Image (cartoon, rainbow, N blue to C red):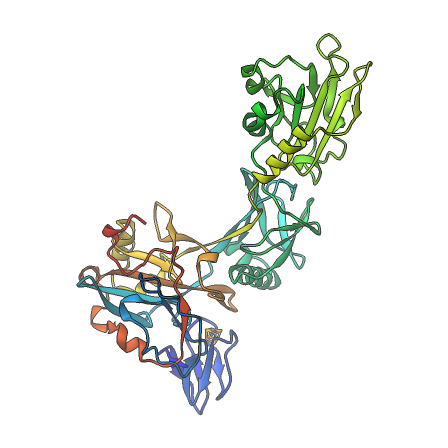
Amino acid sequence: MGATGAEEAAGDDTIRCDACPVLCRIRPGRTGACDRYANIDGILTRCDPLVIAHRAAESGQPMVPFAGGTDWDGSLLRPQATFVTGIGSGTTYPDYKPAPFIVSSKHDGIDMVTVVSEGIFSYCGLKLKIDTDRYLGPETAAVRAKGEQVGHVTTAEYGSQMLSLGGVRHLTGGSKKEGTVTCDTLLALCNKEAVELAIDGGARVVVQAGQPPVVDDKLEERMRVGCGSATIGIFAPQWLGHADEVIVVDDHITGVLTEHQAGRFLDMRPGGIRVRGRKSTPGRYFQVAEPGLGWGGTDITDPLEIIARIDPKTAWPGMRLLMVSTTGEHAAWFVLDDKLKPQPAEMPAPIRNVVERIAENCEPALCTVLFMAGAGGSLRAGVTENPVRLTRSVKQSLTRVTSGGAPVYIWPGGGITYMVDVMRMPDKSFGYVPTPALVAPIEFTLPLADYAALGGYADRAVPLEEVLRGRNLAREAWRPDNPWPIEPKSRQSG
Ligand code: SF4
């Protein structure tokens, strides 16, 4: 364990932690309310190891395996391939002291510095992308965990339902229980654990970063290949000659092949089948059914229900009709009888092949968790005496911001509002404090000269080698898909 400096004597052997506003009084051998700090021999100590990420040599040397432990001193690591993350680094809040680690290193002869800290964020939440067409609930509906509202359904995206969870209103603006459950939910999802959510007027869904969603106990396997109209466009030539009409059932746009531009382009004979719903453009229909867990994200279980009428002047007996969903999960083959009524029939092999190809072209359904937080407040005071210069430096792309070494997206406009994909971060990167708020690693990397120019605590910079000689370090293999942060930004595009 390593001392953080975030401490204050509180008489006898009890010490007071000032790493967050809870100001725990911690007795010897005990931990504070968040279990992140302990009183070890009268010294306030960050319990978790400081995570050091190490990348393999470019020669193809194997990745360094994770091997945490208090007896490892980091001496085997190559400094030029080593990055000190904010995980386990400690902090104070508000940041009235310099960040716990200000690490200097060299990159291609340039003196660099990485300011390493753990941010305490009450303005934070996450955007959850769930790859499914199944109906999760109406837009703006409350999303609940353990009965408490922790967020809401937001705008759906192409092939995905989106939830917005957390945020300062749920964390601190409601009841104590709402705040605690919201904090627990965010923490679990950010640490890549599974969470069950219930949506008012909608579904129950189990979500976990990097894993497929489970909607009302059903594992979602595929993301749709496209909307119904796009599916028509992609597969129309493959249906030509094997089907007289194809209807792709979709909650967004249901496609009707012979009326659609793709069918016309192929000179297909009009089929005369009119589906329910509101016609958008030829062969493209909105609202053919209610949203649900049936065909193509609708509530339809019998596809013939969406047929409004069949024009006897246009359709003909023996007409071959395929009805299929946008994932290929549902498909049915019909032949019109003498009364122009669709009768189920055995699906011919060429049609089955195209249905299977729809399924083959669907990507695996996953849940994606993006953590979003504002680092533009007092956190900056741990980096520089003149905080607005840090904001400007980030906006001018002179300072690289990472979270546990993972690249972040910085929102334009004021502040340092960032988003990070938790799957690009080491496991268990996040913690919490009971105020409640989330604790997330954050690192600012820039040339040492620039750091001094923006009013940074350059005289407190400690060589990387010295940090690696410290105790209670844990190694983490660098994710090769993450850009290497210790490089002046002008040399990288990211
Ligand atoms: S909750 Fe944790 S960080 Fe906050 S004062 Fe207590 S021990 Fe320190």
